[in-house]
Length: 325
Ligand code: 5AD
Ligand code: FES
Image (cartoon, rainbow, N blue to C red; front, side):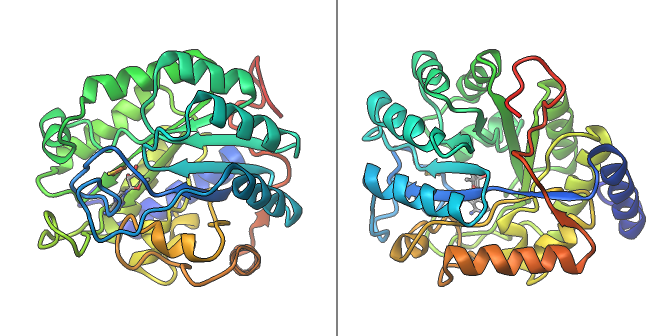
């Protein structure tokens, strides 16, 4: 399915399953990239500690809350707070921010990497609803090569803790990593199903211009779309984003994804210079745009393909105990 099955047919099936299981709505999440400081050194990532060419920033608490307020005003009902692993945002600071943003009557998703169980618990108690952390790959050896100093097992345990705490769990992978095999991508999909993700983000790897992976071939859009479509067939009713990395490889990448199984888009609502500085990979889209522009641009694209903008928070677990919707 990932390589030889006709792509068009695979996308059609994923689109049909998406329609049956989650309907025609596309849920929008406003993404705030509040710090590009990171203690890790993931070889693929433009924000890696070792990349000295990046001008580092973190937004102040007030800036983050103001950005979230504006995003809520233009209609976002989920705010995603994403950053590098920046410990300046300790438990106290994060909890203050979460509590303030929750006053806006939005769902709050955190995407701030590996923390202790106590911190995950505190964030949850402060009101965070969802947590997003990609496993990146289930090939342990590849993971350890690409993420020096990190432990796959530890990341897995973080995901389990997050799930036990009652967060909606988002995870995912990159496709096309150097040394990654098709078999291991198939294992990744089975892993995401096994741990019961509520959301699965699948994006192509895009080589950064800075060493050490600058000269590697990147992932291709077709393999990423195929993987995403297969994910939809495996887990019909979860949330699946049309990822920014897909659109960075093709001007219609997110629309192609929405027609091949995706039902979520995460427009960037970060303001000003910060948008440019959060450079995970080269060619990232929308770095010179504004939140209002991106919201209306993607809104029009979604409507142009006959889909509607989701109303409500777009939770996966609407029917389950502990629902937030
Ligand atoms: N290409 C594509 N995706 C990347 N990410 C990090 N670096 C790259 C890259 N070079 C993804 C990782 C991470 C998410 C925030 O961005 O999967 O979890
Ligand atoms: Fe921080 Fe990659 S170096 S996420």
